Image 1 (cartoon, rainbow over the protein chains, first blue to last red):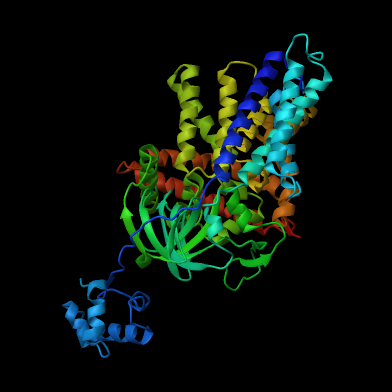
Image 2: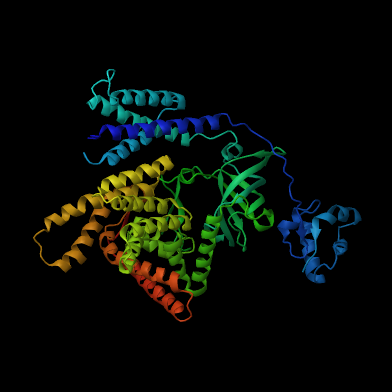
Length: 109
Length: 502
């Protein structure tokens, strides 16, 4: 079993040595790796209030499931929002709340 | 075994990997590294001629060489299971965490199927940063991401995702069909043999992310993307669209399974009938498909009359493309490597020893990913091939005196292949899938020739499907063959005593 010529043995051993070096290097790289933080600017979460579903609306600040449902029913009865300001017509959204939302919402058909 | 060094080395290499898996925790990488170095050093001394050498070529040299191979395998396995500190697994747990993740889509949709009533697509996702405790951390490692969406994301899309991330389930669960007939789909039942986390980790996937379209923001396209892969994936999408556009539903799903390696849309009842008739292997692109495809290509080249060296090389290049084309799924890569090993052997013009080629393929696959050894597919395909290579010539020898050439070629040889493959694989299938399918021996005799026809028809469709009249015609031909395969599989699955669940 495994009757090899000298050249063949050299070849195998050379491969093993090379392989062992590679593995050791890769292992060392893993061992010295450090935790790093990165600066990443999260894209702002924008909601299209004319197409959004309840889940999406709920992610906006100050809007819970009840409010989300109200926005949707208002949208359905009034035939969609024409302007961002239209959101103020929904019961429970005043000037103050709207200012917070202004940059987070968009309007389209 | 004298002329089969690679086969022997592969066996010892496998032994090393098995050893590494059951090694106690206290044995560390460094210990094995020292051991390996010593073995290699002494093996070297035994090989070098000169005054200091200890009888070159003696038994001691062989033993040391074998020990070097074994401990090298252990080293490789241990390294494959070591992760850097910033690896994604260190940031997540069993329970899902809702957080933000940045990464890049690394594949076209692996699967597209309804998930809680909505369509969701699954992709490979190379993670880059994750938000934990209010900070963004740099991470490494591949996750599988499921996005609930009607849209299709592309290879190279860099995404910012808000979603739930967790480790794959470590529990031992498996799908077992037929238990919940009312819903017509399988039910998760306890099984001791299938572990989803290990299954994914063997493919170097370490996390699952679940999200919805509106939680995904595309940051850029073609981020760090490879243009060859991009091109191949674009062709893949085109073919997928053409199949969806021109071929009826179930047949289309079947075509996508055997050509693109995506069987997610093949109805469960059809998959079940393949499983119960013992022909499930034809749904996974494996050695059989590759062998058929290679045969067809070699045959075509021979008709054209190209030089042997050229067409072997072209076939090998084609196989590499095909493996990339099917998203480098382990089964395809395995089969392609095996086929390439045989082709290279033939190209070198020597009288190739098939076991040696097989050993080379095994070594190549396991050095690339030693964890593959514990993959059911790896075990089944190698066992089947070894068994066919070993038993078929011996079985045919028994029939040496039989004169009728056609009966021999079209009945006895296929039967011998079918029996040998089944004999070697049924214990494993029984262990992993809890099913035993004696009907497979007969079923495969009928279904494999059909698969042959199907692959030729589908390749013709791929090549000529864009033509106005011929395209739809070829689509119909594919449809007919696929329907015949489904009914055959259904028939064999319904036979009494054809299969037993244990």
